[in-house]
Length: 241
Image (tube, rainbow, N blue to C red):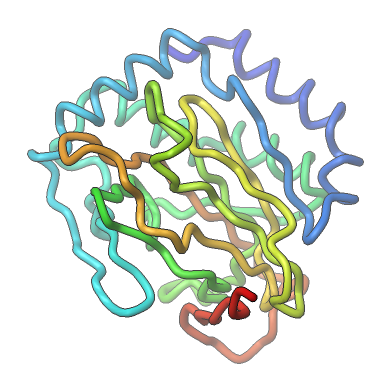
């Protein structure tokens, strides 16, 4: 269960790490280890690992991606209570206040439908090409401002891959790599050139998956986004050698 003490710790983190967030390269972001209380994170990982076969997954399969995600409006369906609690917390007004303070974005709102978000699952061989995200919510038309990803992978091995990659604006260099280990969260600003993904196919055992929760946050003001709506934009990485 998520306690008032945990919520208070988030607000303290927002103040302490706000400058770090704004100054990060290649675009504003912060990596937060120990995001949930540790025992709660372990419970979440176990729940997602055992229930992944009972959840209604939408398969994304193309040259740019191979992943599964919960469907919009159905992220809670067939999930265990701790998963429902975590997803609710990520959309809670207190979470929105924390993220707004940390990222210095006013007028921020959550997405109760978890469009494009909810729970993500990448099985053996799955990947997500480097991309910039869609920029406007399909219903409210608000502008997408922040992405929050929480990884829930116990005993994730380095040679399984799956690192989140953050690329520079010219798409010439991967500046940051973030291994998707248990209870690590990443918050970053969404913009037309916030290039990110995990493009190398994961090589975890067949019985394992790269599991995460993803929630996105919007505002009426565009911030760095362009007014014209666009879908996800994928980019090719430069050739090696």
